[in-house]
Amino acid sequence: AVDIPCSAYRSGWSNPRIEWKFQKGSSLVLFYYGGDLTGTGWGVPGASPRVPQDGSQLRVPPEPYRNRVQFSPTSIHFESVTREDSGKYICEVVVGDGSHIAKSEVTLTVQGGFLPSP
Image 1: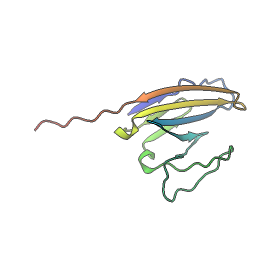
Image 2 (image 1 turned 45 degrees about the horizontal axis):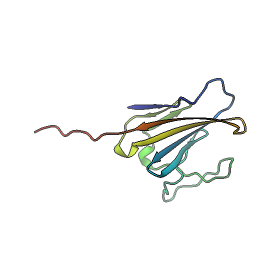
Image 3 (image 1 turned 135 degrees about the horizontal axis):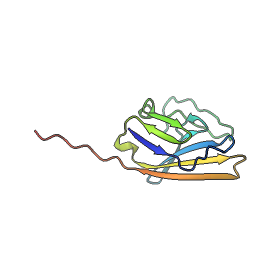
Image 4 (image 1 turned 180 degrees about the vertical axis):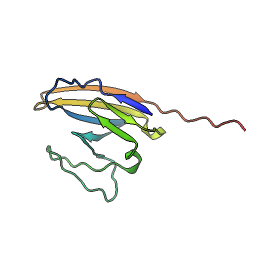
């Protein structure tokens, strides 16, 4: 199991919106927005778009993230990780009308396992 903290979050803020983004190379994906898993950019066939308040379309994430990841305002908890989970996790906390944004980043590197010797 792996926990990725959102050190940008402060408990005293009134109604903050938490956004988690995942960056791998030049690709940046918003996958958690205001309490919901999203998945913009994954192009999941048959996924139903959801329209948040800002009008952007969000998609349900692919199966590899479901049932493995739990979110709270302060962290992401992975029950298990794969090499595909390696990358930069960016937490942005938006307060009020968006005039205040706090941000923290954590880079996750998942190394390959070792095969037992015969």
